[in-house]
Length: 413
Image 1 (cartoon, rainbow, N blue to C red):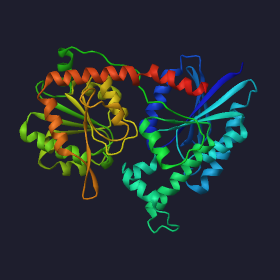
Image 2 (image 1 turned 60 degrees about the horizontal axis):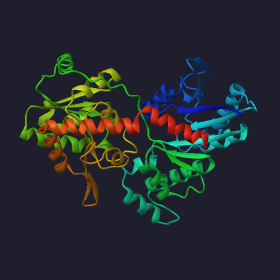
Image 3 (image 1 turned 120 degrees about the horizontal axis):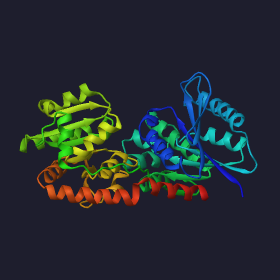
Image 4 (image 1 turned 180 degrees about the horizontal axis):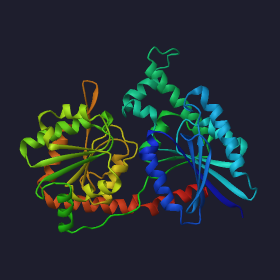
């Protein structure tokens, strides 16, 4: 029986610093003490030389890029050279089954050279679709673009979206197994393109359960640590301060909440254009705390003391922040968008807010968002029930042991 060796790929990018970075971090926690032999390959690294390091339970490799490998003129050369280097580093044992686990779409050149140079299988995991982000999750607009069969497009934005879709399709067709992080993503890809006979699976992202059930005294101590009064009602947003995350709608709803209850504070934990959002907050800026990007310990402190978590994205392939909040038993109010619809069972494991269309523009229904925030603020027992249900769903579907079982099932296929 052949041994198995899995190499999981990362690529220097904004996504690597956020969602995909967390995914690989959790992957390492999941498999480093298991029987699975795996390694990490970092592409497009900023180092000047190739680096190889033996870590606790796995090997990590860094392959630098002399230019931007995403540019068409560089992509093929970089992919070819990177794979040749890998062949020298890894070698090829005829008694080993090699699986290359990719985490970025559009890498069909890399898939091509991996399969040319190795006897291997390629598992392609899609965490997001760039063209979905470019349209801010507007599926109606996407279908309109796909239905337009014009040979020449005057709109460069639409042309770029179609080119990216074709590149993603090619990458999927050249891979041996296609994995989506949510049913929403799988349905979106199948509706957008013909993925042929490529086998596919849905494997949700997951987190190691690190929740600690704190006493009220411990929670009060955390509030005092951050100079938050014990009786202040605390709303928490965690993520990039990006228009796509529905920040404008969140600020609008918060302003309405303050009209009914002045003893409420909103914490915005994440990187972004603070000047823009402070200006948009208007006269309620003094009730909002922009923290910048926090380390995990600080963020988890906030999860433990907040009264609710808010996830207001207009486009969300999965919703890692939502399950992070649910892990901590924090009741979540989320937009009815993308993968969040699967995570949040409305009125059970969270509350959902619809996205509506007004004058041809998709918007989060801020009236409903305001109502649901006020509903939770005024009902401690409801907060407790929804938080407990959310944690129960996290343990059943999004805890790391569930991911491990599902990912091994993909590898075994």
